[in-house]
Length: 248
Image 1 (spheres, helix red, strand yellow):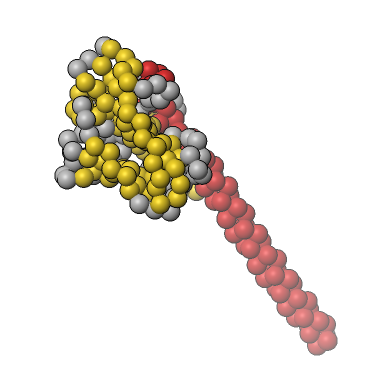
Image 2 (image 1 turned 60 degrees about the vertical axis):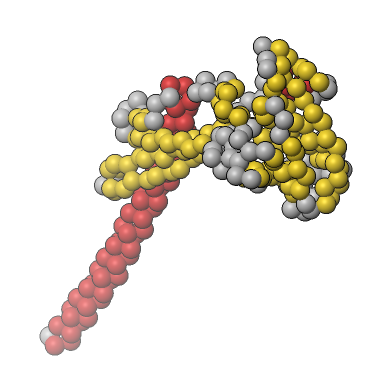
């Protein structure tokens, strides 16, 4: 009898141990499954937030509206804009310019619809500068006298320094083209002058969130694009000509 009771006790202990192990494994698998669900949900929400930010930018470009909501009213985007280099004495896009390509710097403001305005650069001189470039650079200066647009060309050698462009007439545009190789360039106003806006940065923050499979979460994604003002066709054709290129 005593041996039988001892055996039953051992069996009970073994059953309890096996049950504890199974319970531990079950809890571990349940926790892992819960984490996987949360990760999958976060990935889905991040993608949805990004898509909503992109839709917010498209909405702004199409309507001018700065508050966007998805058709199902589950995700939202807030859109903001800022002018590029407006009121600054320096314009540096920070971009590497390939040999033969042109970087354009506006010296006049633009209207809301993108047309050229009548508020011109207010300084006497502008410097075209480089940090590390060495070689020939073509600098086209577009300006207006009366109703005529004109262009003056300069072919200069830059050796990690600056070239000063004297302002004549009503300044419109500077086009900088490296000839020898590629490089980085910027323009600097002298004697207190400031530049007009070069375009706008459009920034959208998309938000998506809610409850999915028992998981409460929210995701945000930020997306931005840069819209610089377009160069009219008549100015582009003027890069191939000297003197007067258009009359109003």
